[in-house]
Length: 183
Image (cartoon, rainbow, N blue to C red; front, side):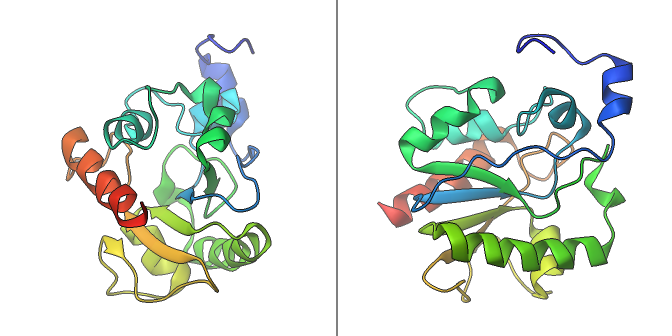
């Protein structure tokens, strides 16, 4: 599918259960971790690809990137010491289609990924997924008391447009708090 093409309904149906490649390299400043890819991401191969997802605008407004990056430009994040992965690899229409076991297994795999790539910070985008994946039922947004080896762990709100609890500005503020904490 061309970079600029919108997925068709058939493309979205075909994307169910797919996986997409991480944007990762050793020694990143921050490895952002989504819950799992949505169908738009599965159809396009780009993280946070669905229109209305506020990840890219929050990243820019918080100062992590010097300009608004499009999902098809995701590999440019590596130039700024940033990367993207997911707790669970398979695409779904909604994150609540994942089972608690899938999230816990994803958490174990994420620990291994962090040990391999050693980012300075792992930023999990979704409090509920973090609580389940890591067995931390009382976790709150922000810096976490537990680290993964030398990697600090931070929880940020889920940037999905379905997360009505946070406006774009509130998301950008949370992202900015993380950026300022690691500068």
